[in-house]
Length: 325
Length: 259
Ligand SMILES: Nc1ncnc2c1ncn2[C@@H]1O[C@H](COP(=O)(O)OP(=O)(O)OP(=O)(O)O)[C@@H](O)[C@H]1O
Ligand SMILES: [Mg+2]
Image (cartoon, rainbow over all chains, first blue to last red; front, side):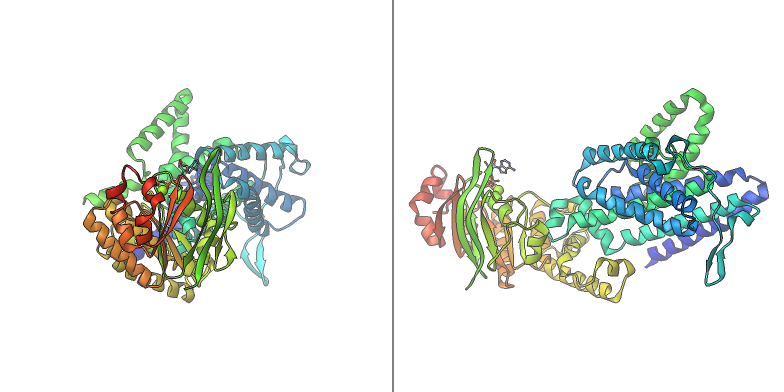
């Protein structure tokens, strides 16, 4: 009971900080440029949350960029070609990705270890090739001038104002992204800490034993993979709306790898690990940019050292200190 | 006593090897039936065939008159035919109690959505699972270790945990693959009592075991396999005197068959 209270307080505090304090601080200091950076962190961490969930059932997922790309195109095409409201395309993009992932997952989720990882890596590449080849995606020149989200009205009440009328669109996207991030991670936390999560954990530990106790392992794997891909699609869709452009290069193999690293870095045992991992990796990468040609070298070395000394991720630091005290 | 499980002309071929060769027998409700045989005789393979973890090359398995050998393993478990594993097989990073709680899956009345939303049906389930888990843990002398991480359990307890996991599913028949392996005499005798208690709760028991002393003590009937073939079937008394069985065990005979 007590642990639960601490968790709720910490979550509320975190939410207050990212939704109110950070915008206030950025407006005060005039660092409008940071909005885009933090928005990216929020969206990338949503996609990483999906990868984290596939780790949770014991699969190394290197295909999340495929769903981010797919989600981006679905939302964009529905907005640009069919005039749908962005707010409607957001869940549609997520559900479309979930549906596709079920079809793809049916055959490939049987694979384990490096076989699953490699297959999903190929998936990322295939999605890029598809984006280049399909007529509706506009090929390499992509889709540009995507209109900003219009107002979201339900029963005549404006829930979200028209983004074109806003003085600071960047802040609006930031708020949208962090609120989505909080919702996604709250959902993920709830799932993982429910009995469903316990069953997923049983798959991760021993699929044979799980099926011997009557667990339909392929069904549970599919559910996890579908939710994972939903997160990927969601992140990709918002990203396209922010940049107002959609290219096949929006999400690449690099991103797939980074999503995975975000999870490792934050810690695979902690639901909120991907947020921290994404934050550190994103800013670390930016900061290393100043090192010029040594960027990749330093980056990889630091990662290797981190994984050697903190195999359970950065969040384990906090817990380790607690257990020593 | 009606027949609960019927094994009909079951065979399993691995490449050129006939691991199980045309085996047929019946298991009656409420009995303890042991399958014995030298190493590599095909006992574990037979269990995997019955629980549908392997597809038979020929023959079939009927449970309560219904063919189960084409079903996925989790569906066979759902019908009430549940296996344990010869190798230690547990959910390592869960506590002992969580191992048993999670294994109550088949007794769920709530669906997955109930569990995520925390509906009253889900809460009721979870309470029932926890209570039932404690009962099972006590039955198998695991209650004291319930909050330990499963991977930290001593070897003898791991076997018991494997059985506890199987029992939690609420099986009609449980297939125990060498449940006494690695136990000393005293531990084995305690485990034999444990298995008896499980049977007395109405669970039919199919057992593979090398400890002949335990097998002779516990079994109502025995089936003997050698090189995949069924060479004998009968009461412990009959098996003890069976020429073919003595021959199959030649060299290790006297002591190991408990004569
Ligand atoms: N998956 C498999 N592929 C190929 N051969 C196998 C496979 N599983 C078992 N075998 C072979 O089938 C034969 C029977 O194996 P099984 O494990 O059923 O024996 P067992 O009676 O359980 O032996 P033990 O008492 O040592 O556990 C052995 O020769 C084994 O090597
Ligand atoms: Mg065996």
